[in-house]
Length: 242
Image 1 (cartoon, rainbow, N blue to C red):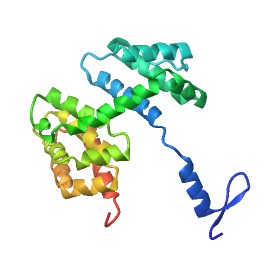
Image 2 (cartoon, one colour; image 1 turned 45 degrees about the vertical axis):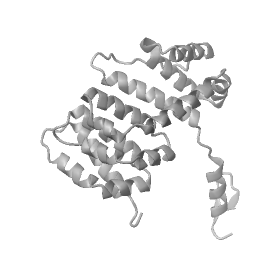
Image 3 (cartoon, rainbow, N blue to C red; image 1 turned 30 degrees about the horizontal axis):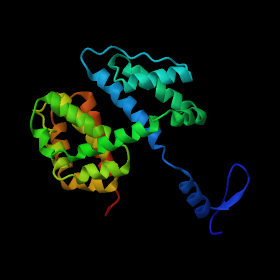
Image 4 (cartoon, rainbow, N blue to C red; image 1 turned 60 degrees about the horizontal axis):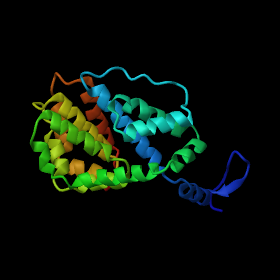
């Protein structure tokens, strides 16, 4: 033993061995992650819409019957109840392992989540030039779709490797652009910027110069400034030579 460590149980282990065991014991819960992302995107879409109303959430964990009803609403694309239904499903899933097992056994539910994920990844085939065309609304919609598939390191790397895509995103961050376009673009960049390789790419493409130019504007919304500072902090955290 090179570095003995004791847990709260009083048992002593070699540090590297117990750390390796712990690292191997954690398995990403992709299905729950997908549920949370679906809910998060839907809530954001409703909040951002002009006609949106406040989303009210019950503090109680829904029953199994309520969750089954919520799943049915989501699968019927029932827009009026979609956000509330997703909130119920996610709250139910987060409450216990037993609830997550129940969701896993709902006929076809996990398979449909997996299929949704596959279709989302296919969206990476769209040309980067699509962000040059169309209205601000269509650009915002495209950015939200892109952000919705940045759920793990693999998808973030695939997005960054898409030819011309990161450059197009940086081109959208111009003072003369619609603030909503800029903010959604920054959100997308934040989502993909965590892998070291992507941080390096952003730096090489002149992201720091782009962000600095944006910060010189005097009428920026606070939310945009916060996102720019978040990106600058993320890029500055990369290790030398990374």
